[in-house]
Length: 208
Image 1: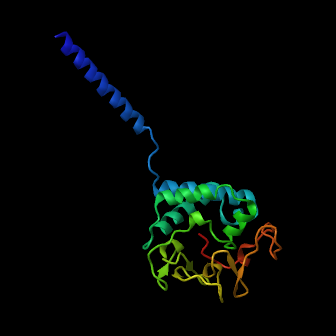
Image 2: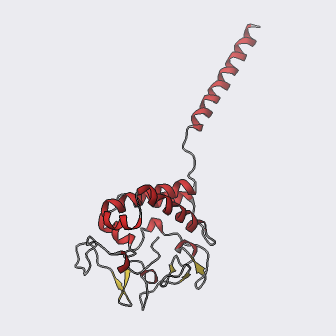
Image 3: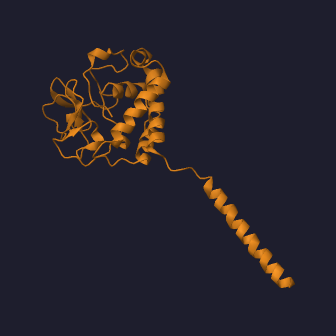
């Protein structure tokens, strides 16, 4: 009888220990959702935009909360559109990769004057020539917009004639109708990214 009690006590102790392990496992961080990932990305981007270009930020948004509200919905729409293969973890990785950018990088990205970080480039499944609202829908990872059109077109990047930088190879910008390889750090350039920009002076572009 005494042996049975000892065995039962040992078994109950093992079950209790396993339950404790299960409890610890439940404390692990939940997998990211698209909503949470987009919120983290846009929170960081809005704060950086306000810090680096407060005048231009104020022309677009009333405050950081308003900025995040608008851009989070846009992020979810773009990364959920047909052709996307984007996972929440990829959006989260993009947010992490871009959270500590310099102000020149922040401003140039906001106005479509630089290419997105490689961690934020996600090829989709739509073929060249198909309609798109985000580059992440396209197999070429490039959705090009013209003028004020609501929908763009999946294009293949090439350093030739262009209307937008999204038509050029990564690392090149569309300047005066031609794709031009952008200068590297410490090289000369013709544009000061820290100069205040007028919103109506920059052509609309698909930035992210």
